[in-house]
Every structure is written in C-alpha cells, then in structure tokens.
Length: 114
Length: 109
Image (cartoon, rainbow over the protein chains, first blue to last red):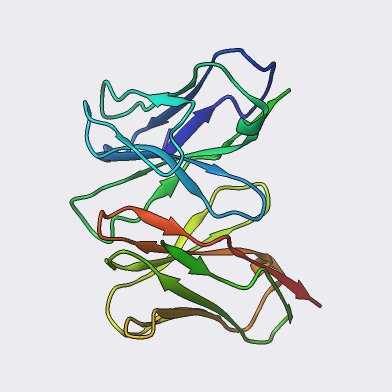
C-alpha cells in the first residue's frame, strides 16, 4: 500500500453502540489527525497525535477517543454513538520535520448513526 | 475566535480563468494551504504560501497578503475536471490547520 488507508469505507450504526474507525499510514509520518466533515462546515479536528505515544484534543473531541501505540496506526473510537456523530471522517498524516508539513488524507469513512 | 471565509459556490466557463478568495482571522499565522476536493473523495494538496506574493504551479497560482489576511487561488484554462471544492486552511500558532468551509466550483461547457 502507499499512503493512508481507512476502514470501513462506510458504516450504519445504531445509537449507543461502540465503534472504532481504523487508520493506517505507510509513509512513516510522525503526525496523524482525525477530522470530521459536515455539509456547510469546514473540516473540524477531533484529535491529533504529533508522535507515537502522544495524543491531543482538537476542536471537537467530545464523544471520541484515540490512541497512538505505534507510528502507523491511529484508531478513532466512538464509545457510545449518537446521531450527531453522523458525518464523514477523514484521517490524515503529515511529516512535521520536513517540507510544508502538508497533510495527506485517507479516503474517508462515511458513518451514519441512527 | 478563528475564522476562515470563502465564497460558498462559484460558476465559471471551460477555458476561462477563475479566482477563489479566502480571508482569515486566526490566532497566529504559520502558512496557508489550498486543497482540492472532488465530490466523495479526500482533499488533496494544491499549494502552500507562507510569504507574501504569488506562487505559480502550472495552471494554478496562489497569492498571499499577510497584512490583509487574504489569499486567492487562481485557476487558468479551466477544464471540466476542475469542478470540485477548493478548501483554504491556515496553520495557526499551535501549528494546527484551521479550515474554511470550502468553495464549490462548477465548470460549465
């Protein structure tokens, strides 16, 4: 693989259920990010990690948790899904030590919470 | 608060030129990005400006004025495949990206 992969591509989930969105990158980037994208709004940062073993809260962290056990993987967990978490979720990564630090995005996960 | 403003939608004709504006008010400034996002796909990097002036990359150019909190993306010789949303994002004092809602560009033949 090259770049960032996300799984699943889409999911319909009952409210109250637990769900983990997976994200894996093979570019050895130190930083990774989770965003949600809703119609009419810009990408909003949920959580980020600047290096393996550390994480930070973004603009909209409530209801979500992340872990960064290694460089490549950055899963996002919804402990108890609610309908307002219906959105498209994008994982991204960047190399904070070189270039513009531009972020590279995965293909996204479309999540519907009923 | 932090704010990025872009027009919601623009329409242009194939072969023409279009300018998409972005104004920002953020806590600190460490660069401005433009991304392209086709419907149903992920955003992809187009350009980066950190100093005032124009950066040219083929048919696409991006301009920055830090004193005015203003940038634009200029697309020349428009092609149908340029129909997409264009996202402006500013890297703030915490080196996090603050994103505009995006400008949907519709290209007509």
